[in-house]
Image (cartoon, rainbow over all chains, first blue to last red; front, side, top):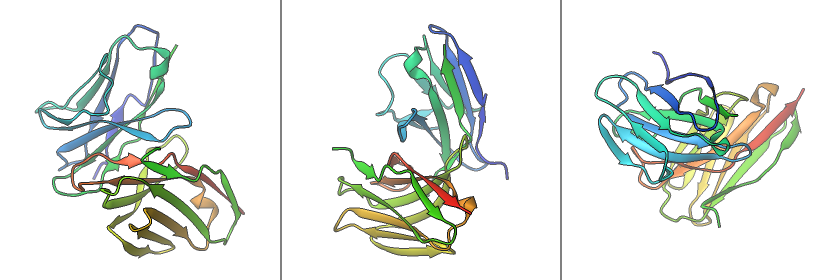
Length: 113
Length: 112
C-alpha cells in the first residue's frame, strides 16, 4: 500500500512566480491536510480538505495561497507570486474518515530565489 | 504563550540510555496526543497515539499524558543510534479529521 505521495520533492521558484504542490493521499483516505514547516519552526497547520470541499482553512495566509482537492486527482496547494518568506517544507497528510491519525508524505521543499 | 511548548534541545545521549521527551500545552480542549518522529529531510512518521490521560507502551516507547498538568511525555528505553531524529509532539481537540497542533520538535542524537 503506497503511502502519501507528494511531488515535486524539490521546487525552485523566482520571486513572483507561481508554485504548485501536489499531494496524492493514501488509498482509502478521503481527508487531506497541508502543513508548512519553516526553518527552526514546528509544523504549522494550513488547511484541511475533503473531496471538493475545504473544511478548515484557518491556517492559510489570506492572500496568494489556495488549496483544492478535486473529485478526481491529487490535492493541489497553490502559491501565487511567491516571496522569499514562502521558502519552507510543505507537508501533506491524509487520514481515513473517523480516525484521528494522520499519515504524512515526504514533503515538498520550496526554495524561492 | 504558544499552545504547545516543547523542550528546545538538542539532546545527546549514549546508546542504551533512557530518553525522556516532554511537551506542555495550554489548551485544555486537547484530548488526542501524538508523537511523531522525523528523520532529516523526511516526512513525520507517527510513533505513538494516546487519547486522554494515561500511559501507552509500544516496544521501547512509552507515552504518558497528564491532562491535569497539561503535560505529555515520551520515554525511549535502551536508546539506539537509529533513534537519532527529531521528535515532534502533536495534539488535537476534536480527534478524527481535525487539525494537529505541533510542538517545535527536539532533535535527539544517540551516540554509539
